[in-house]
Image (tube, rainbow, N blue to C red):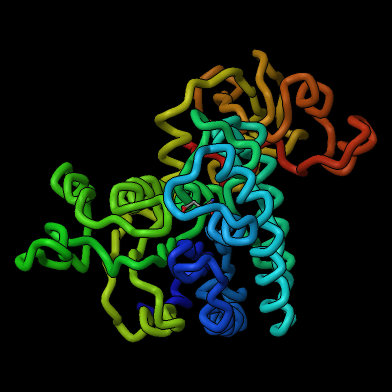
Length: 374
Ligand code: GLU
């Protein structure tokens, strides 16, 4: 597998790799891994830009419980949250120090399930992550354990990593843990268990294999890894599950080391467009003039200048249907402005938006990446 074939890669690092049995950080291991990340970031991907890397890192609870002297065994939720509060700055200090040796900035991003479910928060987080990546930064993401309530926790960073992969339209998600991939049965107890190198469709049989292996330190077992791979799969993102303890898992992956690849059958863009076209209820209508209708067919974004009328109530990021002057639906898209603001800027040039609204918004009312034209 050639990692430069992928424009953006999310790497999830499990607690069992980052900390030893006593909860001390495995510094040398992380140093090695981040060296590989730094080298990868220097290389160009297929679009001619450097490969983008996002890290989703566990380890806050493990580092914190060690520091606080919490006994071994299961922690109560509030103890976990306290441990995370204490461990997260330690975790981040390590990333910061080790990345700075390569002149790379690491940025801490803590997310909760709610942040990824609420559209507006999702869009905000997405835009922030995009801005960090454009600036060459490596976002280091964890769940905001201290505030996430039990019902609204990811609880495992496998699914959080998949959600992050969706947010940044990543093309590859690498789940590094103490498990080297998917097996037909539990390899620790069943001698006949066979490793599965490639999964092209996530069938009920594949999902049933989830019970096969459980990690000792992290929260996620194979069940959450398959759930993560499934989320990524339907967002057009490939997932690799591999064992990462030797310190150079990325190099090993490039050389064909043991792993399971869940191969997505579409690109992130196709998956996103499919979702826009089929899954969403339109909360408004945007009627465009003939010039804009033609531009949209040629793959351009919809600018406020080409819009004649807006109907309905919608917020930023909601789906709207795009109509031509005769009222025929010619497309669908996610709108970059709430209805009230959109009404004020239609018919105007994009350069006038800031003066009309009092803030600097997007040039397009609907960006071409957020639009499907029929
Ligand atoms: N957020 C947790 C931590 O940083 C890890 C959850 C997991 O094990 O996946 O310790």
